[in-house]
Structure formats: structure tokens, C-alpha cells
Amino acid sequence: MLQIKNIVKKFGFFTAVNGINVHINQGELYGFLGPNGAGKTTTIKMIAGIYAPTSGSISINGIDISKNPVKAKLQIGYVPDQPYLYDKLTGREFLYFSGGLYNLDKKTIQNKIDELVDILKIESWLDKRTEEYSQGMRQRITIASALLHDPKLIVLDEPMVGLDPQSAVLVKKILNQKVSEGASVFVSTHSLSFAEEICSRIGIIKAGVMIYEDKREAIETIKANLNSNFEEVFLELTK
Ligand SMILES: Nc1ncnc2c1ncn2[C@@H]1O[C@H](COP(=O)(O)OP(=O)(O)O)[C@@H](O)[C@H]1O
Ligand SMILES: [Mg+2]
Image 1 (cartoon, helix red, strand yellow):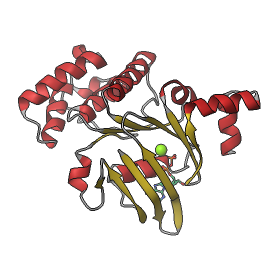
Image 2 (tube, protein in one colour):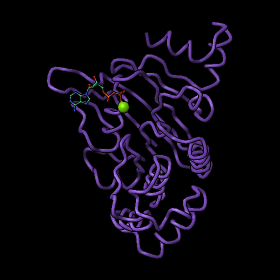
Image 3 (spheres, helix red, strand yellow):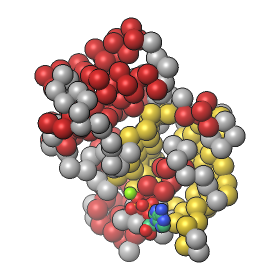
Image 4 (cartoon, protein in one colour):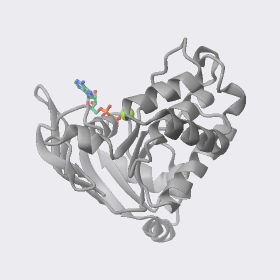
């Protein structure tokens, strides 16, 4: 579903991402971990087609994002680290606007809004302007807007930052649900407990290089061997 082949991203002389490879199959929930400045956001922006890689290639559902950007982007639902909402629009208006960008017709958007509003519990806020929203509600609307077109790949950049517990539970729930429906998820996170809880596989990046990648169960083995928790393993790997 997602094939990242040896991508490199340079900003001037600085190499932010230095030869990352990731392959994600359908139905996988892939956690992308790493300390601040490791290159997570830069990698995600390349997957989302916002940055062009300096070298290497990325394909989504077999479509190369550099060669066929519009078609590739239709396969993706992207939740950026700093989601942008229009303050003066209501949540519903924003969702119609977002659905329009994907050329969805009104009826389809309406049906999707009904479904997503129910799962994400946004009904009582839907007709209020987004300037009134809490961080958690902003995140829920952003996620809803990224799922309107039923993307095959959902890409989220640190979606759990600043979330209240209710929103955090709902975000986990919807990701699990989408995966069970056959979508794939690529999610960057600082939260080790989140990765342990919901990811089927994790990769750890440090200074632009993947230093560890394995199935979640492997973490259990490492923890048992080191007689420590995932946090200590992570700190050890990324120090
Ligand atoms: N547009 C940019 N120009 C120059 N350097 C950048 C730019 N974006 C990110 N960087 C640098 O690339 C590195 C990786 O950043 P980033 O991908 O945001 O890391 P992370 O998301 O893992 O915290 C950092 O050292 C950051 O300062
Ligand atoms: Mg980041």
C-alpha cells in the first residue's frame, strides 16, 4: 500500500532524511517513532506530496507520488501536525469544503459526515465555528475531513499531541476501525504507549536514519530481554 524507497531529503547542505525505506501492507497500522528533529515530519510531508524527495521514490497503492501526484493524493488521507481550519467556518462547512476538494458530491459528503460525526462524537459542535473549538475538537474535525474520501492510506503526524483523554480514545478507535475496514495507517508519534497500544509494527528514526523496525511483538521480546519497559528501550535506541 505504501512503498518508500530509499528517500533522501536535503535542505541546503543539511540532510534531514537519509535513505529511509518503509513498506506497508494493507491493514497495517505502522507507528513511526523518533526524537524531536529526527525527520518524521519531513518524511510524512514527502509521503503526502508536500515535499519532493531529493532522491528516492514513494508510491501509494502502486501510484508514484512524484509522477502522478493528484492520483496518488486521492489515495491518502493526511492529518498534518499543525492542522489548519478556517476559523469563521463551522465544522460542517469545513467538511463540505474539504469534500469538495476531492470532488465528492453533496450527498456522498452528507453521508460521510453523518457516519464520521457519529464515530468521532462531534455532533454538538458541528454547527459552531471552528474558532470556538478545543484542541481535541479541532483534531477530530481534521481527522473527519481526511477520511471523507475513504482513503486507502491514512497518514497522521503526531495526532495525539495536546489531546484530551476523550479525543485520544476516539482517535485510536477510528484508526482501529479504518484498519479493520482494510485501510493502512502510517502515524508518527512521540507517545510510546500509543505505539504499543495500537500499532502492529513500528519503525524508529533517528537523525534521518531508520535505526529499528519490527513487529510490535518484538518489543515485548526486547523488553523481556532487557528487563525494562518500552520507554527505556526507546531511550536506549535513540540516545
Ligand atoms: N524546511 C526546512 N528547512 C530546513 N531544515 C528543516 C526544514 N524542515 C525541517 N528541517 C530540519 O530537519 C530536521 C528534521 O525535522 P522534522 O522532520 O520536523 O523532525 P521531527 O518531525 O522528527 O521532529 C530538523 O533538524 C529540522 O530542523
Ligand atoms: Mg514533527
